[in-house]
Length: 284
Image (cartoon, rainbow, N blue to C red; front, side, top):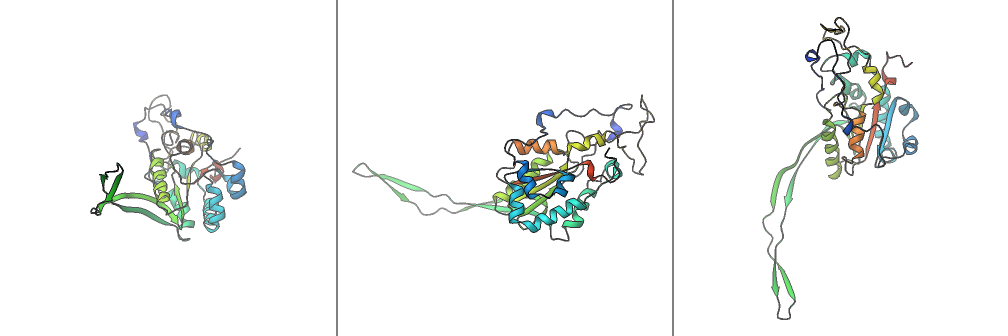
């Protein structure tokens, strides 16, 4: 989770909204062949959650979470089911990134999910051998005395995950720069390679929210719809489409990275927030 990527809408060309950035080269709308089958996900993730979220699993994350960490799964599902947003949440300018994780924190923090950061030094030893050619033509190696070990301080440093409990990690990216996914996946990979977690869980926006962004108005700091000041759309409300652009954190950007294996050997379970979680949105 990081600071919200909230483009300066005042810098838009008046009378028109910024076009959606292409970004097609690094977007995947479906899980790749390295993802788990949906039938496996249905076996482990409740129907109630699957009705509200898009769910994808890599390296058997859903199975590992359900069979090895059922208590953590129950707490995650409770947080997912409690989560709701409004069109006002979506339209509020700048800073509402911090409000989104609070909605999950209300359930997870009291249950013992804490922020965690990994730090480690690397101890390096080099062993040296002398080699002697014997009269018989054979060689004999003799180990020298051990050299002084070298310590590389902070070899692993700064990788942070917002929610960790036991061996399960959880993180949310609502509307940050899409490169934030690289940092998140690298952090979960580092925690996993160091034996600290068994899997990671990530939540982000489903692409199904895009039609919502086409019509939800961008709000001012006072909560009023922001209007175009000039041009052919003068006096008309701006929508949040530019705010939630292709280069922000959403499912297409995350699946692309997971399909490419950027999570390494760390199992990852992904949930995509859909319009069904918007309290005041007409689903029809």
